[in-house]
Length: 268
Image 1 (cartoon, one colour):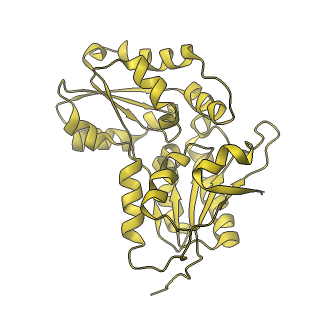
Image 2 (cartoon, rainbow, N blue to C red):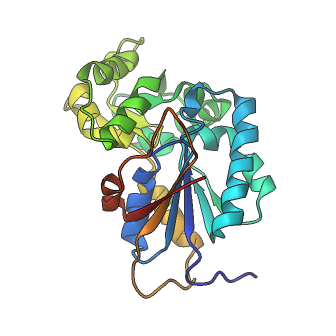
């Protein structure tokens, strides 16, 4: 069995900055773990791309990143990429791969009304994977879905220091509320890693009777479990943020990434 060297990083991969919401709880569990965070800004937003495009793009790009940074484990910190490309990535790469799935199972245990909202990208909410999770874990409950590309853009803009437009938040919540049974919804699954960046705004718009849930904590625990017993550096170091080059989406300033333990930017 291959034993990774202590400086082998964990690679987090997302279309943009949403995967930082997975990086944060992982850092809390593994404080000295070296980290490479990769954002595919050239492909943003994934929710607007076809399944075939993502099934080809994600494994190819991850293959390049794995070759360059030699991680011990890769995390697809993106619901859209995970629901479409996870099997393709696992087939292509010879290292542990952790995916991100909508937290429908814990939501089904939390709801009292039996009505759950799933807020994601359009690509995620239409996936058969979501049908399967709903059938397995929320049978007999009502699962409402709404795809909001606007929220991805709002989360990215917020991390770049821009204000969040309340109308965007209101439209996302209305997209669930206005469906049959939406009045009784008491749990919302944030099925896009970008959306917890807007948790305060979404919670306020949803109202006090609604709980928001995401899978970040569970994914962090999964990463810790898969790397149990491995060697880590004695002290924490600043990680690297990698961005695919895009004229439309320049990287954020390093200062905006520092609170996530990222101290330098690479462009690929």
